[in-house]
Structures are given as structure tokens and as C-alpha cells.
Length: 168
Image (cartoon, rainbow, N blue to C red; front, side, top):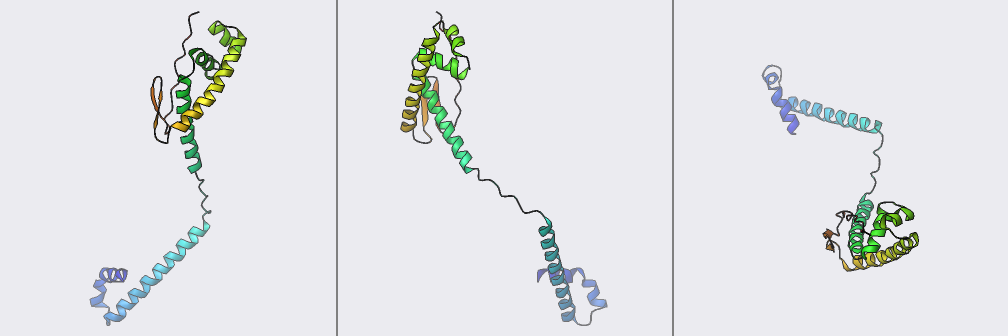
């Protein structure tokens, strides 16, 4: 109805000159407005039918939950790493984080390769146990303490600890 009266207002100059019956004139405008609306709706439907169907958006909630869990595990691992003995932590950081081979780590630390292997095995086992303990004791959103400060268990990434060589 509002479109009809807006159109009538726009065409008001014709009212004085050409129109005999105002009612018939308004009904004619209303009819034209309805035809225009129906034609525009039909054209819109036809244009939309020519478009390809929208692609289904993937559900990213599982990825977000996974990232949160990864962040929590990373924070727990950083805390657990600080609880290892210095010798185990040195071997672990050199071999696992730095990617050195057993021989290169043994040379860097000045110890036999066999000791590197045994310390690394013990360090991995202790880390598994300590990480599980930290995850079990830290509810969501609680900060986990490490030797170099604290790290949020809600996903804030932990920095690698500094690598120090023992002077042997």
C-alpha cells in the first residue's frame, strides 16, 4: 500500500489534468505496483536459480577444540619438561627439539652415545607420565606453572626453553 501511495504522490501532477476518477486511478497504480513486484520477484528467483548452489561450509568446531587441546598439551609438556632432571632435559631438547642425532648429541654433551639413548628413553617416559599428571590436575582455563613463569592451559603456546651446554 505504501508503494502505491508513493507512486501516486510521484504522479500527482497527472491527477489534475488526466484523471476523472481518483479511485480508479489509485487502483490502476496499485495494480501496476503489484505487477512490478511480482515481475521483480520472478526475475530474482530465476537469477538465483542460475547461480550454483552454495557450498556447504565445513564445521570448524572440531579443529578449534583440537587446537585448544593441543595448546593445553603443549603447556603441560612445557611444565613437565621443567620437572625433568637437567641431564634428561638437555638430551631431550638436543635430540627431539633440535633434531640432532644420538652421536651429535653425545658429542655436544661430552657423553657416550649409549648414555644419550638411555637418558632420552627415561626422559620420554617421564614426560609422558608428567604431562598426563599435569593435564589431570589442571582444569580448563587454569594456568600451568613452569620453571620460567607460567603458561595458560587454554591454548597459549609455550616458548622452547633455552639450550645450555654443560661445561664438561
